[in-house]
Image (cartoon, rainbow, N blue to C red; front, side):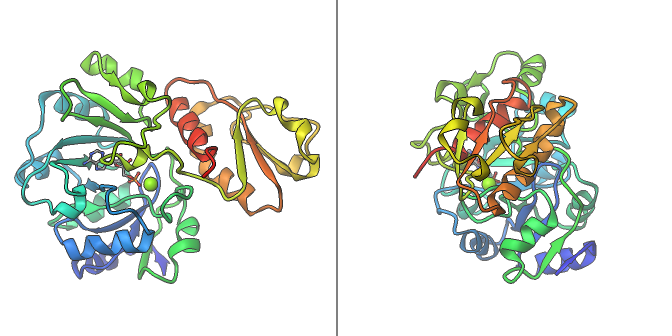
Length: 323
Ligand code: AMP
Ligand code: MG
């Protein structure tokens, strides 16, 4: 069931059940993070590999401290600027956090999401919520309640409807368990903005060629193929590939450009006015729309590679990798 009843969501979570929650990045599939049995339902529902740890969500840094988590100074600085917001911090775990949440590692990922309904919900709870994106493992993340309904409508008791996500891509992940603060995943906050606050950071996705690190079990967002459409997706200049396919059977994801060779209805132009933030907001819904069409291939442009544009390119790149 879809609705806006925060009390109902709170009660179900207190009973150890799963509830989908809106955030500004994507919708999450949430459970009581202190209840290992509840958390195990997330892995089952998503068919998520058990080595993929989960982000825990709460509404204040103070509560994290109460739960025994030590906050590094540079995280305090970042949190002042960006939390609540699309940034996740990886810090040493406390013994309140069950191993299933961290996939057996000593580090826990924490985030304060910036969505009014979910902040009210978190305020009511005396535990954090473990919540990965509310999609089947490997598929495109959901950015509205209907996306969640399509995959989990029959499995979970409640979807809290907070409208469309206004960031639209997942959080940026910064690790403080590495010797230098390290970006593990590009996301809603640009790496440039983070460097302005805490100085040099280690840009791991760049080192690994756009976030692709199959050998790193503590970072599921870094799985090579992820965010993937069912249709084949090519992340490159569409003009290089357009002539290879039947023009009627091509879908296009572009920033501002219309490709006259391809029918209008096969286009997803993410921001005609050229706003990279708007493009990020619309990316996943566009991927899902084209995936529902009877076409052979999705041709997706490369977006400007700065700010949230890095996250867009990272997701498209990983969607483009064939199994
Ligand atoms: P999702 O919530 O579906 O976007 O996936 C969770 C993301 O959190 C993954 O991309 C992981 O990289 C990250 N994550 C969660 N826990 C940890 C951790 N303990 N260490 C490093 N990364 C983590
Ligand atoms: Mg995910």
